[in-house]
Length: 215
Image (cartoon, rainbow, N blue to C red):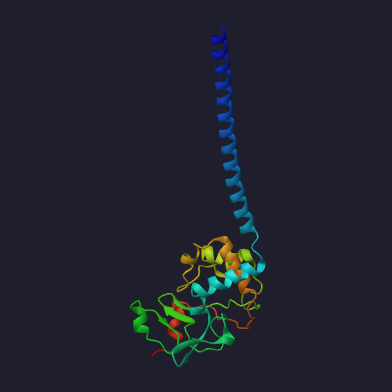
């Protein structure tokens, strides 16, 4: 009788131990899940906490690193070769710049050429001029963030979906891979740079090339 009671008691203790182990396991799993949730929540909050200054700084970094100044800032010859003109930073092709004589035979053979200041490009498509990216009315002054994203993401002139396609050598199809956050940061930065009043001329069509000075 005593042996039977001891056996029953051991069964009860064993069951309680199993329940305790299972309960401890559930607590451990819940604790791990809560920890992971807190980590994800913290990362989201950290990302959402980007200030306007942080966004502008990132935009400045992107503009500088992907080569926007290569075409949109006029160049002049310096001691070490072509160098940016600070007073025309990202202002595009100068409105008063004259197009040099060009070799039409080379163009007919498929060659493309840059102007001496690197802001105009001539090729089989005609002549394209680098746009004014400063916050002046002749540049991006009246643009919205959505227009800027459309221009880069879809390669549309002035960010108008019904507009013409951007002309070479603008590599918008590469920049289209940037995130909306990146493009928004770039736009915010461009709104902070000095405004330059510079009305870039419209593109020259292939038919109009024959009326330009020839080498």
